[in-house]
Image (cartoon, rainbow, N blue to C red; front, side, top):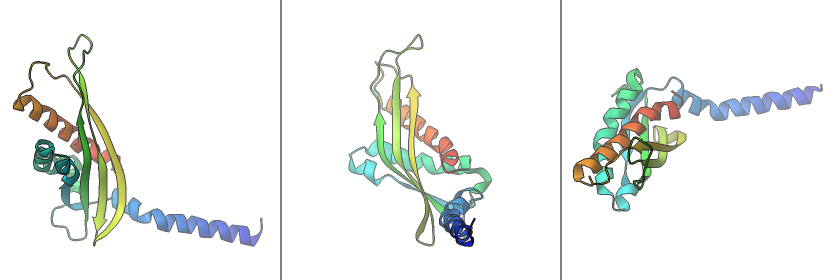
Length: 163
């Protein structure tokens, strides 16, 4: 093998390492000083219930799921921005012997930021199967589905960003 082929391989390997280093550093041993929830796209679609509930409960769920990787106030740590762009509550249909079923889902992106720069971006798509009652379309049952979807996202998020 020629010396130039080895040099090219070394250069490409180094370039790849430099390119992915911020993302790896941002997730593998990451600590987050803050968690921000961006529900503006959902709110713009008119779904203020989901936007309000997610904004209220998601920071606590995510910080709990991150465990010791959540370090409020650590100035050297990155920030985690969870931007939810779509929340859909599926139609209720006849399920199996467990009763009616529905599948709700969320789409968005998780951003790891530091010093005004985005270090890494992770697409988020999660679904949550629920067993709602066909006859119970009250505010309470709606809140149950919204909170269930937020909980599913909060607990699943760390694994999605490589933790």
